[in-house]
Image (cartoon, rainbow, N blue to C red; front, top):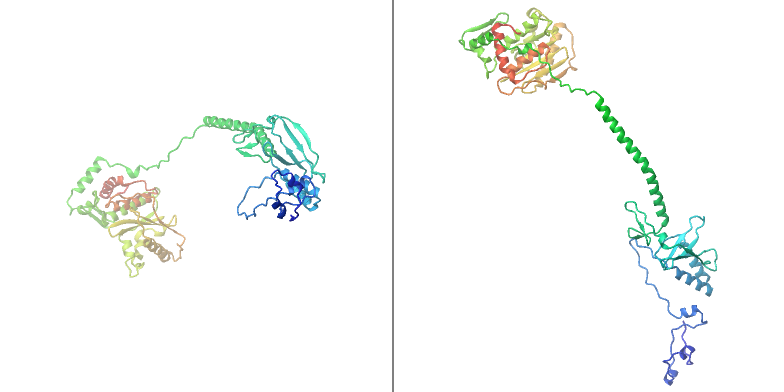
Length: 480
């Protein structure tokens, strides 16, 4: 830009119709902002106007869409730079074109399309100019092989745009006229072709999928047919076999005998057991009535009858020993809660007539103030068992009995036995009382069934029967 102070008329001013020949205008020097033109070419005319300065670029802190480049500006600037001999400017524009050649996009009609030839090893820049005619489409291919020019333009007349506009539908995909998918531009037509190939591959596989589905359904029908032909296994309900002997009903004569004993004089001695020297009077016999608590005499006499039953039929019953209700009290009467010397002579060979250690099970009735329980030294299974009709637990009772058994073996045989590996079991699977007065009956029936080698297959409903049966067996001094 230069400053001109000459007062002579310029050729451009002569062409101005508004120009006046006043002297005032001649004398006053004018400053001109127009550049000095050295030639009348297109470049000189364009250079007269100040170039628009772009605003300062601000720092971007978020993703933004890339700007679309208008190729005609780049070509115009490149040609202008070559005419002016500006080699640096030309190299800059060529580098920019080279960078743009790596991109490819497709725009609407009337705009240019940049694509990269995927078949060649080195990417070639191509520019496609699409005319606005809706029926005929012209493509101009520009090659970048020539440095002086952007390339020879070859116009190729192609088919109508209707051939390009195709509709490919598979669920959610749809390519329509204008090159839009779901309302957005397609930047790469090759992806559509790839997707089309994928759809065709899926279509080819659909036949296999249908065939496999048919085979699955066929095999399911065959399986159902085989299941119908296969004989069904009848569900077998496991029923516990209840023995008949513990539940034999009393005859009419036995029922009448029990009723007369309940109405007898309380001071009258109904029965006397000579070997144990136990006498049952009418008053003591009343504990076998419903809702009454069993006393020591009735319990001890019944346990004696169980022992006599086993001696009478040794093959039918297990070999057992039954301590009376005073044994556990005597064993735990010492200062430290345990005294073996007080019960040492209770199990002598001369007194029992057999060895205690020969028995498979040893029954110990335990009275917990107002409640009866049963403890068992199960030598056959190496267990210390505790049975409570209210499902109570007394670990101390089992510990005392384990200590007693060790001392008993040591006293009678002189051997030391280790019971640390024996199990201490609180029996859970057992009949439970549902009132506050049948605990004694439950206790003696636990001993009865265990001495038979049977499971505890009774419940609260059998208690009235067991009371009458026990009364009948005591009156006849014979357990069955």
